Length: 90
Image 1 (cartoon, one colour):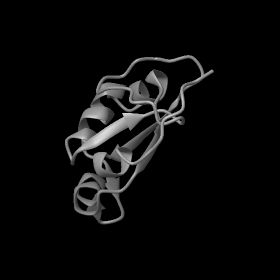
Image 2: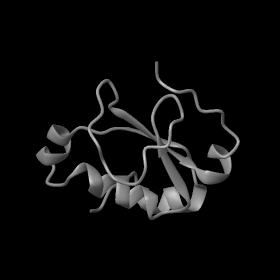
Image 3: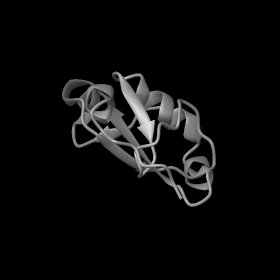
Image 4: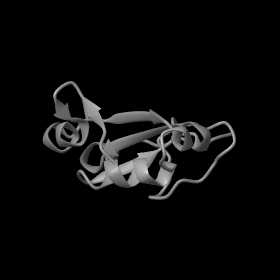
């Protein structure tokens, strides 16, 4: 999968700058472009030491799972994630 932003591939920028990345993952959106949610997760996670979390900071693991009410996924560098307080969903 090749994700592009301006003239430099997006994945190169992620590896270089190690940003927090927010994406809305939906099977239907990914299928329109010929890939799966796990392809996006693998691409981002392979660029550094990232934790995929929901909006409450809960670790969602490394594979896509459709969760009720959760479309946004946050890829947070582990060094930042380890300093966060996660709040369980109520």
